[in-house]
Amino acid sequence: MTPKEQAILILAKYINLSYIQLQEKNKILFSKKCAMIAIDEICAAIYYHYDESTEKEWSYWQQVKRAIDNL
Image (cartoon, rainbow, N blue to C red; front, top):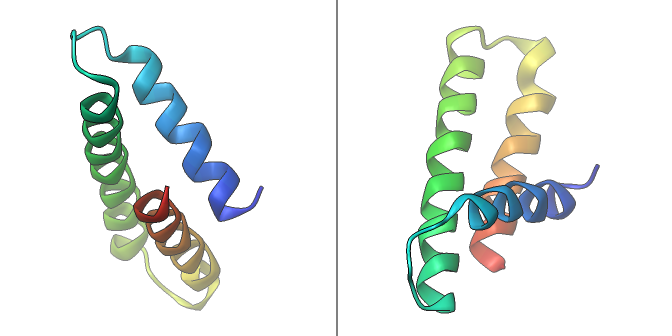
C-alpha cells in the first residue's frame, strides 16, 4: 500500500468514527489530528526498537504523515 493510500485509509476510519456534529471541514481537520497522533505513536514504538531493519518502516510512516498533510 502506498503512503497516500494508507493516509486515506486512516483518515477515513477517523472520519467515520466522528459522531460529533461538526462542519465537514472541521471533521477533516479533527480526523487529520487524530491520525497524526496515531502515527506518532507508531513512530515512537518504531523508534524504541530502531535499527537498520526498521529504517524502511520509519520512512514509510513519515511518508504517510506527509500524505495526510497534503490531503
